[in-house]
Image (cartoon, rainbow, N blue to C red; front, side, top):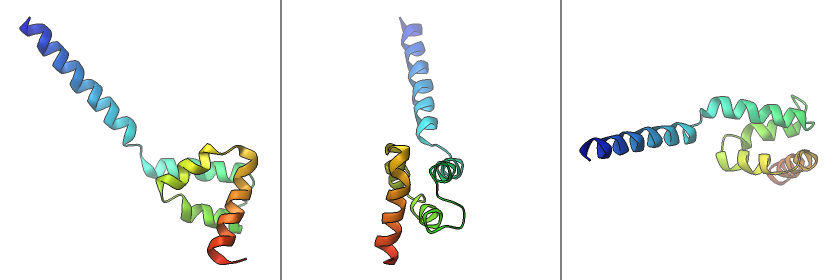
Length: 88
């Protein structure tokens, strides 16, 4: 019985460690991959849309919002975000 309890405790520790590593996503790598998605939807490097993406994607919530959209709506969203912030 004691051995089974110890085994359950070990499994819990391993699960917790896996869970933590899943949520501790390397933000640098993740930002780079989301920036690639911005380019893929038409935000050309050096454009206003690419620039605003580089500012927005520092925040996890903004990256998640962008990725939740269909590919066809992402570029328009970046354009609106730029216009709201910089008044173009």
